[in-house]
Image (cartoon, rainbow, N blue to C red; front, top):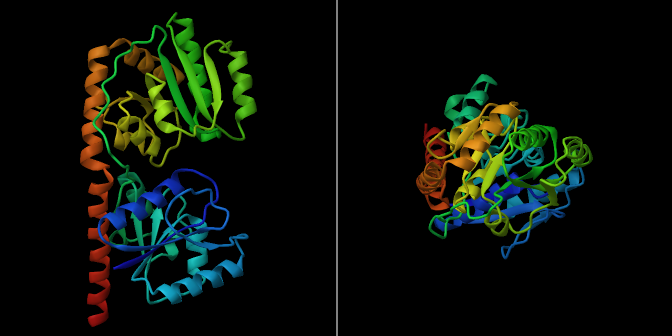
Length: 345
Protein backbone atom coordinates (compact mmCIF):
# COMPACT_ATOMS: atom_id res chain seq x y z
CA UNK A 1 0.00 0.00 0.00
CA UNK A 2 1.29 3.48 -0.90
CA UNK A 3 -0.18 6.60 0.72
CA UNK A 4 0.29 10.21 -0.32
CA UNK A 5 0.12 12.31 2.87
CA UNK A 6 -0.47 16.03 2.18
CA UNK A 7 -0.46 19.08 4.45
CA UNK A 8 0.00 22.64 3.13
CA UNK A 9 -0.24 24.73 6.31
CA UNK A 10 2.83 26.91 6.84
CA UNK A 11 2.62 27.62 10.56
CA UNK A 12 3.34 25.24 13.40
CA UNK A 13 0.23 23.85 15.09
CA UNK A 14 -1.98 20.85 15.65
CA UNK A 15 -2.48 20.06 11.95
CA UNK A 16 1.27 19.94 11.30
CA UNK A 17 1.74 17.70 14.33
CA UNK A 18 -1.05 15.37 13.18
CA UNK A 19 0.42 15.26 9.66
CA UNK A 20 3.79 14.12 11.00
CA UNK A 21 2.14 11.63 13.37
CA UNK A 22 0.21 10.12 10.44
CA UNK A 23 3.48 9.71 8.57
CA UNK A 24 5.14 7.97 11.52
CA UNK A 25 2.10 5.80 12.28
CA UNK A 26 1.75 4.61 8.69
CA UNK A 27 5.46 3.83 8.38
CA UNK A 28 5.39 1.89 11.66
CA UNK A 29 2.72 -0.34 10.09
CA UNK A 30 4.91 -1.08 7.07
CA UNK A 31 3.03 1.28 4.73
CA UNK A 32 4.93 3.33 2.16
CA UNK A 33 4.31 7.05 2.75
CA UNK A 34 4.99 9.95 0.39
CA UNK A 35 4.79 13.28 2.23
CA UNK A 36 3.88 16.58 0.54
CA UNK A 37 4.17 19.96 2.28
CA UNK A 38 4.23 23.67 1.49
CA UNK A 39 7.61 25.05 0.47
CA UNK A 40 7.50 27.39 3.49
CA UNK A 41 6.17 24.92 6.05
CA UNK A 42 7.96 25.19 9.40
CA UNK A 43 8.73 21.49 9.70
CA UNK A 44 12.05 20.12 10.91
CA UNK A 45 12.45 16.42 10.26
CA UNK A 46 14.89 13.84 8.95
CA UNK A 47 12.24 12.70 6.48
CA UNK A 48 12.22 13.82 2.85
CA UNK A 49 9.27 15.74 1.42
CA UNK A 50 7.87 16.88 -1.86
CA UNK A 51 7.37 20.65 -1.60
CA UNK A 52 4.83 22.75 -3.49
CA UNK A 53 4.95 26.52 -3.75
CA UNK A 54 1.49 27.14 -2.18
CA UNK A 55 1.04 30.73 -3.35
CA UNK A 56 -2.63 31.07 -2.43
CA UNK A 57 -6.13 29.66 -2.77
CA UNK A 58 -6.12 30.09 -6.57
CA UNK A 59 -2.59 28.79 -7.07
CA UNK A 60 -2.73 26.73 -10.31
CA UNK A 61 1.05 26.12 -10.10
CA UNK A 62 0.64 24.06 -6.90
CA UNK A 63 -2.27 22.19 -8.46
CA UNK A 64 -0.05 21.24 -11.41
CA UNK A 65 2.78 20.26 -9.06
CA UNK A 66 0.44 17.97 -7.11
CA UNK A 67 -0.89 16.49 -10.33
CA UNK A 68 2.66 15.60 -11.42
CA UNK A 69 3.50 14.12 -8.00
CA UNK A 70 0.39 11.94 -8.06
CA UNK A 71 1.13 10.79 -11.62
CA UNK A 72 4.72 9.95 -10.71
CA UNK A 73 4.04 8.17 -7.40
CA UNK A 74 0.70 6.45 -8.28
CA UNK A 75 -0.53 6.23 -4.67
CA UNK A 76 -3.34 3.89 -3.67
CA UNK A 77 -4.92 6.56 -1.44
CA UNK A 78 -4.37 10.24 -0.65
CA UNK A 79 -4.73 11.64 2.87
CA UNK A 80 -5.25 15.41 3.02
CA UNK A 81 -4.82 17.57 6.14
CA UNK A 82 -6.30 21.06 5.99
CA UNK A 83 -8.57 22.99 3.64
CA UNK A 84 -5.84 24.13 1.23
CA UNK A 85 -4.74 20.56 0.50
CA UNK A 86 -8.33 19.40 -0.08
CA UNK A 87 -9.05 22.46 -2.24
CA UNK A 88 -6.09 21.80 -4.55
CA UNK A 89 -6.86 18.07 -4.77
CA UNK A 90 -10.47 18.78 -5.75
CA UNK A 91 -9.19 20.64 -8.83
CA UNK A 92 -7.14 17.67 -10.06
CA UNK A 93 -10.11 15.30 -10.50
CA UNK A 94 -7.93 12.28 -9.88
CA UNK A 95 -9.95 9.06 -10.11
CA UNK A 96 -7.21 6.51 -9.51
CA UNK A 97 -6.44 7.39 -5.88
CA UNK A 98 -9.43 8.30 -3.65
CA UNK A 99 -8.93 11.23 -1.28
CA UNK A 100 -9.41 11.00 2.49
CA UNK A 101 -9.85 14.36 4.22
CA UNK A 102 -8.87 14.51 7.89
CA UNK A 103 -11.43 16.58 9.79
CA UNK A 104 -9.28 18.55 12.22
CA UNK A 105 -12.01 21.14 12.83
CA UNK A 106 -15.64 21.95 12.08
CA UNK A 107 -15.15 23.38 8.60
CA UNK A 108 -16.85 21.06 6.10
CA UNK A 109 -16.77 22.82 2.68
CA UNK A 110 -13.74 21.00 1.31
CA UNK A 111 -14.34 17.79 3.25
CA UNK A 112 -17.42 17.32 1.09
CA UNK A 113 -15.15 17.05 -1.97
CA UNK A 114 -13.31 14.05 -0.45
CA UNK A 115 -14.25 10.43 -0.99
CA UNK A 116 -13.87 9.60 2.71
CA UNK A 117 -13.37 11.54 5.94
CA UNK A 118 -11.38 10.71 9.06
CA UNK A 119 -12.96 12.40 12.11
CA UNK A 120 -10.77 12.91 15.17
CA UNK A 121 -13.63 12.75 17.72
CA UNK A 122 -17.11 11.30 17.98
CA UNK A 123 -18.46 14.84 18.37
CA UNK A 124 -16.93 15.80 15.03
CA UNK A 125 -18.23 12.62 13.40
CA UNK A 126 -21.77 13.37 14.57
CA UNK A 127 -21.46 16.97 13.38
CA UNK A 128 -20.30 15.93 9.91
CA UNK A 129 -23.37 13.72 9.54
CA UNK A 130 -25.62 16.71 10.34
CA UNK A 131 -23.80 18.61 7.58
CA UNK A 132 -24.71 16.05 4.95
CA UNK A 133 -21.66 13.79 4.89
CA UNK A 134 -22.84 10.18 4.79
CA UNK A 135 -22.06 8.05 7.82
CA UNK A 136 -20.46 5.27 5.76
CA UNK A 137 -17.91 7.78 4.41
CA UNK A 138 -16.72 8.71 7.92
CA UNK A 139 -14.11 6.78 9.93
CA UNK A 140 -13.10 7.62 13.51
CA UNK A 141 -9.32 8.08 13.84
CA UNK A 142 -8.10 9.92 16.92
CA UNK A 143 -5.03 12.12 17.07
CA UNK A 144 -2.08 10.28 18.57
CA UNK A 145 1.20 10.68 20.45
CA UNK A 146 4.57 8.94 20.72
CA UNK A 147 5.01 7.18 24.08
CA UNK A 148 8.55 6.26 25.02
CA UNK A 149 8.56 6.36 28.80
CA UNK A 150 6.61 5.42 31.89
CA UNK A 151 4.38 8.00 33.58
CA UNK A 152 6.10 10.58 35.75
CA UNK A 153 5.13 10.49 39.41
CA UNK A 154 4.71 14.03 40.71
CA UNK A 155 4.13 15.74 44.00
CA UNK A 156 3.74 19.45 44.63
CA UNK A 157 7.21 20.04 46.02
CA UNK A 158 7.37 23.72 45.13
CA UNK A 159 6.37 26.06 47.93
CA UNK A 160 4.49 28.06 45.32
CA UNK A 161 2.95 25.69 42.74
CA UNK A 162 3.05 26.66 39.08
CA UNK A 163 0.01 26.50 36.79
CA UNK A 164 0.85 26.35 33.11
CA UNK A 165 -1.03 26.84 29.87
CA UNK A 166 -0.07 27.41 26.25
CA UNK A 167 -1.49 27.96 22.80
CA UNK A 168 -2.18 30.58 20.16
CA UNK A 169 -3.35 33.86 21.66
CA UNK A 170 -6.74 33.92 19.95
CA UNK A 171 -10.18 34.44 21.46
CA UNK A 172 -11.35 30.82 21.31
CA UNK A 173 -8.39 29.66 23.41
CA UNK A 174 -9.95 31.32 26.48
CA UNK A 175 -6.83 32.87 27.98
CA UNK A 176 -8.88 35.84 29.18
CA UNK A 177 -11.02 33.41 31.18
CA UNK A 178 -7.86 31.76 32.52
CA UNK A 179 -6.51 35.11 33.74
CA UNK A 180 -9.83 35.91 35.41
CA UNK A 181 -9.74 32.52 37.14
CA UNK A 182 -6.23 33.31 38.39
CA UNK A 183 -7.46 36.60 39.82
CA UNK A 184 -10.12 34.66 41.74
CA UNK A 185 -7.48 32.31 43.15
CA UNK A 186 -5.46 35.33 44.19
CA UNK A 187 -8.50 36.86 45.94
CA UNK A 188 -8.94 33.59 47.86
CA UNK A 189 -5.39 33.84 49.18
CA UNK A 190 -4.16 30.75 47.31
CA UNK A 191 -0.44 30.69 46.55
CA UNK A 192 0.47 30.08 42.91
CA UNK A 193 2.47 31.23 39.93
CA UNK A 194 1.32 30.90 36.32
CA UNK A 195 3.19 30.65 33.01
CA UNK A 196 1.41 31.30 29.71
CA UNK A 197 3.19 30.04 26.61
CA UNK A 198 2.34 31.06 23.07
CA UNK A 199 1.76 34.17 20.99
CA UNK A 200 -0.70 35.72 18.61
CA UNK A 201 -3.13 38.51 17.88
CA UNK A 202 -4.56 38.73 21.40
CA UNK A 203 -1.20 39.13 23.13
CA UNK A 204 -1.47 42.88 23.77
CA UNK A 205 -5.01 42.67 25.14
CA UNK A 206 -4.16 39.66 27.33
CA UNK A 207 -1.17 41.42 28.85
CA UNK A 208 -3.39 44.46 29.40
CA UNK A 209 -5.96 42.27 31.17
CA UNK A 210 -3.23 40.73 33.32
CA UNK A 211 -2.13 44.21 34.42
CA UNK A 212 -5.74 45.25 35.06
CA UNK A 213 -6.24 42.18 37.28
CA UNK A 214 -2.96 42.98 39.13
CA UNK A 215 -1.40 39.64 38.14
CA UNK A 216 2.04 40.92 37.15
CA UNK A 217 3.66 39.17 40.14
CA UNK A 218 1.71 35.97 39.55
CA UNK A 219 1.51 35.38 35.78
CA UNK A 220 4.27 35.43 33.14
CA UNK A 221 3.94 35.39 29.36
CA UNK A 222 6.86 33.26 28.15
CA UNK A 223 6.41 33.28 24.37
CA UNK A 224 6.31 30.22 22.14
CA UNK A 225 7.42 27.02 23.85
CA UNK A 226 10.21 25.28 21.95
CA UNK A 227 10.88 22.48 24.44
CA UNK A 228 7.61 20.83 25.53
CA UNK A 229 9.28 18.39 27.94
CA UNK A 230 11.06 21.23 29.71
CA UNK A 231 7.84 23.22 29.89
CA UNK A 232 5.83 20.41 31.46
CA UNK A 233 8.66 19.61 33.86
CA UNK A 234 8.53 23.21 35.07
CA UNK A 235 4.81 23.23 36.01
CA UNK A 236 2.61 21.44 38.53
CA UNK A 237 -0.79 21.72 36.84
CA UNK A 238 -1.76 22.20 33.21
CA UNK A 239 -4.89 24.17 32.35
CA UNK A 240 -6.64 24.20 28.97
CA UNK A 241 -9.14 27.11 29.05
CA UNK A 242 -10.44 26.84 25.45
CA UNK A 243 -14.04 27.82 24.70
CA UNK A 244 -13.87 25.85 21.43
CA UNK A 245 -11.41 22.97 20.99
CA UNK A 246 -11.96 20.30 18.30
CA UNK A 247 -9.40 17.99 19.94
CA UNK A 248 -6.55 19.30 22.09
CA UNK A 249 -3.29 17.46 21.31
CA UNK A 250 -1.68 19.49 24.10
CA UNK A 251 -3.71 17.41 26.59
CA UNK A 252 -2.06 14.23 25.33
CA UNK A 253 1.33 15.86 25.89
CA UNK A 254 0.43 16.88 29.44
CA UNK A 255 -0.75 13.32 30.14
CA UNK A 256 2.49 11.93 28.69
CA UNK A 257 4.60 14.01 31.07
CA UNK A 258 2.48 13.21 34.11
CA UNK A 259 1.03 16.68 34.66
CA UNK A 260 -2.47 16.83 36.22
CA UNK A 261 -5.03 18.55 34.01
CA UNK A 262 -7.83 21.05 34.47
CA UNK A 263 -9.67 21.68 31.22
CA UNK A 264 -12.89 23.19 29.99
CA UNK A 265 -15.50 20.66 28.92
CA UNK A 266 -15.19 21.82 25.31
CA UNK A 267 -15.67 19.43 22.40
CA UNK A 268 -12.43 17.43 22.21
CA UNK A 269 -11.29 17.66 25.84
CA UNK A 270 -14.63 16.30 27.10
CA UNK A 271 -13.89 13.09 25.16
CA UNK A 272 -10.22 12.89 26.18
CA UNK A 273 -10.68 13.65 29.90
CA UNK A 274 -12.90 11.53 32.13
CA UNK A 275 -13.95 14.07 34.77
CA UNK A 276 -12.75 13.29 38.31
CA UNK A 277 -10.95 10.17 36.95
CA UNK A 278 -8.21 11.34 34.57
CA UNK A 279 -8.52 15.08 35.16
CA UNK A 280 -10.97 17.79 36.10
CA UNK A 281 -13.40 19.44 33.68
CA UNK A 282 -14.88 22.87 34.27
CA UNK A 283 -17.74 24.64 32.55
CA UNK A 284 -16.90 26.47 29.33
CA UNK A 285 -16.79 30.29 29.75
CA UNK A 286 -16.88 30.01 33.57
CA UNK A 287 -13.88 31.60 35.29
CA UNK A 288 -15.33 30.81 38.72
CA UNK A 289 -15.70 27.09 37.96
CA UNK A 290 -12.18 27.04 36.50
CA UNK A 291 -10.86 28.65 39.68
CA UNK A 292 -12.75 26.06 41.77
CA UNK A 293 -11.24 23.15 39.80
CA UNK A 294 -7.74 24.61 39.93
CA UNK A 295 -8.06 25.05 43.70
CA UNK A 296 -9.33 21.48 44.03
CA UNK A 297 -6.42 20.14 41.99
CA UNK A 298 -3.90 22.10 44.05
CA UNK A 299 -5.23 20.81 47.36
CA UNK A 300 -5.99 17.12 46.76
CA UNK A 301 -2.59 15.38 46.55
CA UNK A 302 -3.79 11.77 46.68
CA UNK A 303 -6.60 12.23 44.19
CA UNK A 304 -4.38 14.28 41.91
CA UNK A 305 -1.78 11.52 41.69
CA UNK A 306 -4.46 8.91 40.93
CA UNK A 307 -5.80 11.06 38.13
CA UNK A 308 -2.32 11.33 36.61
CA UNK A 309 -1.99 7.53 36.63
CA UNK A 310 -5.44 7.06 35.14
CA UNK A 311 -4.69 9.65 32.45
CA UNK A 312 -1.52 7.83 31.41
CA UNK A 313 -3.38 4.51 31.25
CA UNK A 314 -5.95 6.13 28.95
CA UNK A 315 -3.09 7.47 26.83
CA UNK A 316 -1.58 4.00 26.44
CA UNK A 317 -4.89 2.37 25.60
CA UNK A 318 -6.34 4.98 23.24
CA UNK A 319 -3.77 7.45 21.91
CA UNK A 320 -0.41 5.68 21.62
CA UNK A 321 0.78 6.01 18.02
CA UNK A 322 1.13 2.21 17.81
CA UNK A 323 -2.51 1.72 18.81
CA UNK A 324 -3.90 4.45 16.54
CA UNK A 325 -1.61 3.30 13.73
CA UNK A 326 -3.29 -0.11 13.70
CA UNK A 327 -6.73 1.52 13.59
CA UNK A 328 -5.57 3.76 10.76
CA UNK A 329 -4.21 0.81 8.79
CA UNK A 330 -7.46 -1.12 9.31
CA UNK A 331 -9.56 1.74 7.95
CA UNK A 332 -7.28 2.21 4.93
CA UNK A 333 -7.43 -1.50 4.12
CA UNK A 334 -11.21 -1.46 4.51
CA UNK A 335 -11.51 1.54 2.17
CA UNK A 336 -9.39 -0.18 -0.49
CA UNK A 337 -11.44 -3.37 -0.08
CA UNK A 338 -14.71 -1.45 -0.47
CA UNK A 339 -13.41 0.35 -3.55
CA UNK A 340 -12.22 -2.93 -5.09
CA UNK A 341 -15.57 -4.60 -4.34
CA UNK A 342 -17.52 -1.74 -5.93
CA UNK A 343 -15.35 -1.86 -9.07
CA UNK A 344 -15.94 -5.60 -9.38
CA UNK A 345 -19.70 -5.19 -9.44
